[in-house]
Image (cartoon, rainbow, N blue to C red):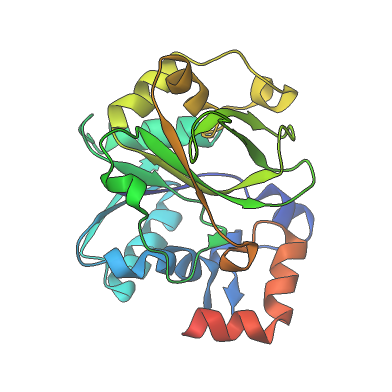
Length: 250
């Protein structure tokens, strides 16, 4: 199951003067929503999709776009309040849709594009409890992953907005079992940054599972494989790039 949390405020866009939420903004002939969800077009006919939203208008918009995109199994959970972060949004969505603890979930942002995404081998490895998708980058504004020096392809630690390595998360988070996500949310590891003290992010939940002995994998991709559209500046770069337009249309 792909889980798309989209119950935030679009605060940065609103403060920049945009009147529509970012997922409704148009880029290269289609809403940002379409480009983000089309990352998983290869699975529209086979996999379930869960969208977690706020407001009847957003619910109607998502329902219309899912039908237009041809998503065979689309569920929408509407929340009646703001949450304390993406992790709580996902939790409320899973519970609202009565998702079984044994269901595999992949969480992704509504403001990021992963053209032609395909599931990596981690998804079929019973020894891996989940994986994060990462690229080499810099700055402080990411979820960061420290690789395990003793186990190739495994995660030792995750930190939010704290550069513990140069491995930055794309925003794609997989959990082999929804029940593990629920348990980790309710049994958080000690926060590793001020950001984790203020807000419930998804990435740090893996620390609870790692501390219990679970293996979390990492999937390395090239930065060119992911397109970010989560800030007004990133949106402007998307609009200005003919190359991105060609990629999104292919």
